Amino acid sequence: MSLNNGAETMEVSMLEPDIVVAIRRLQGLGHGVRGIERILGINRKTVRRWLGGPVIRRQQRP
Image (cartoon, rainbow, N blue to C red):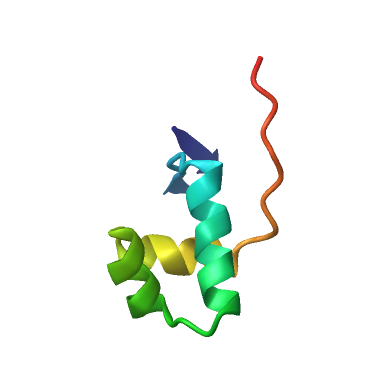
């Protein structure tokens, strides 16, 4: 899915809620971005994006 914010376009990908919870839990346990990347097998840029964003709430499916 892409969001069009005026002149810039941002790609938004869906990540399973359990993975997001795991990212935040591992950070709370003292793991760095690269450690989380290795443990979960996801890209470190994805980890950074989810750590830098707001708290994730459950999405309501239509």
